[in-house]
Amino acid sequence: MKKIGYILPTIISPLSYVSKHSKIDEATIIMHHALVNTNAIIGKNCIINSKALIEHDAIIEDNCHISTSSIINGGVIVRENTFFGSNAMSKECIEIKANSIIGGGENILS
Image 1 (cartoon, helix red, strand yellow):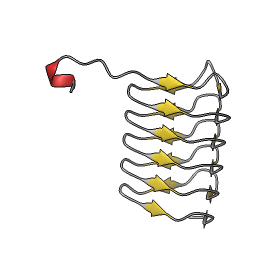
Image 2 (cartoon, rainbow, N blue to C red):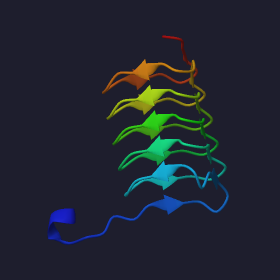
Image 3 (cartoon, rainbow, N blue to C red):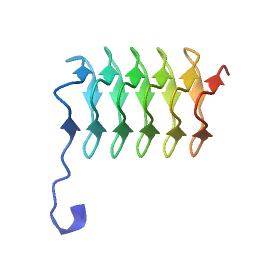
């Protein structure tokens, strides 16, 4: 679509909280009651679903879906094309490899 001139908007729910010190890239949607904290970076074409928490200094690369009520803790890097299921939680300061599928309710510790 971009090749033919479309502008892909970023959509942020007014019911979410997005720190003014975070960065949200194009074509990303931040859903109701999601929270994106200081220095978090969200890439292109991502979904940060309802009640998801993206903590400080986390990086979510392009084409990721962070599902409902999931928690990405501080300093975590989620590589591109990753699905992070509902109610899943990551330990702080880890890297989640590209193309990962994290099931709902999982705790990612390394």
